Image (cartoon, rainbow, N blue to C red; front, side, top):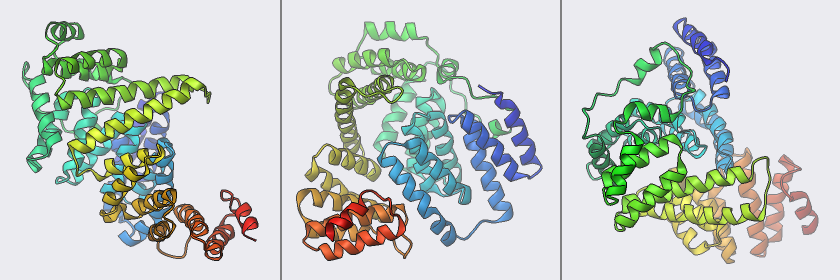
Amino acid sequence: MADLSKLFEKAEEATNRRSYDLAIDQYRQVLVLDPDSEKARYALREVEVRKADEFGSPSKVLTGLAAVPNLVMAQIYSWVKKHDLATFEYEKILARDPKNGPISFRLGRALEASGLHKGALAVFRGITLWDEQNVEAFVAAGHAARRTGKIEEALDFYEKARALNPKHKIAVDAVRDLSAMLSLKPREKASSFRDLIKSPAAPSSGGAGEEAGEEAGDDLSQLKARLEKDPADRETAMKLADRLEAKGDLKNLLGALKKAVQARPSDAGLKRRLMEANVKAMEAKLRRIEKGGKTSPESDTLRKKLADAKKKLLQAQVEEDPSRLDLKLDLGLLLFEAGEIDEAIGFFQQVKKDPKKKREASFWLGRGFMEKGKHNLAVNQLQAAMPAGSNLDAWGKETLYYLGKAKVQAGDPGGARQHFERIYEEDIHFRDVAGILEELG
């Protein structure tokens, strides 16, 4: 890896001189070389915030309009599992509106989906600094800190989430589990991340295993021996799982969690942790099998198993926290892809009640009704999913395409033709629109 310390040094010097554009460019170069750099990810946003505070930023109306194409592309990339590309689109939005909480949260989720947990931690931590009442940001930061082996910091985040919402089950359970894990050694207050940003730069090439080694009191052999002696010891099982996950040792992580679940079959938290580990292990195996773009019967089988495992995990997470509409949307999409249309529609209908997710949920409701042959219902939902205004962006073309198909199915070829012609005027190569227009005559 290139010497990132030089880039950090140049970025910090530029920030001190208030040459914010140069500093932003340097931090972006770091992220090209190390996309999971926690320090660069946070510092980039902090500099963008300072620039906006000092020199002003466009109005919310203008930034909102400018964000539409990036947001649409990010959503499309997320649907096709191109999370790295979705990350770039979210970063473009945040460059104009760096304190945009909902977009920052989506960026954090995209980084998590890409396996960039240190970068996700930086993003979620930033949200908590600028929005101190955001319970879900504190919980997400706790999850990210835990995944990177920063157990004490994770506990701090969970405690703050619990203080904001004492009935938040995930935060309450996490505080209980991590407090028990850390009870054998005195806790020290986590240092301010703002201070870390100001400290002498250091490349983030060290793995999460090193961080975990610094923070965890027991070594792995002791934890394994203790769990072997008493498989029902939940505190040891969770502590061992955190250590193994931070090291990336998925094989032993699965083994330890399976033993713990066998000893405590009614423990929902352990079961969910095992499901999470199982999904990660299958994703890692699929990446190895398909390295270089190769596919095989083995990879096809594994993809089906992975989809089923993700569905079960999401079902468990939704059951644990029914208020998480983002999880319900993800579960609905998985069910849709698996052909479980009725179940998918049920989740899309719940998600649609959230004004922020209404258009996306309406789109998928329309797709679901098309699959069921409810063509008029599909038309209604797809019309509701159309973006406002006359500009036809990527989201609009995608929605208009399926709206045209729904009208064909509903027996309205003339109305369908109008939609396909609108797309054709904007993008002659979009999907198979040219062929459809020929068929419609």
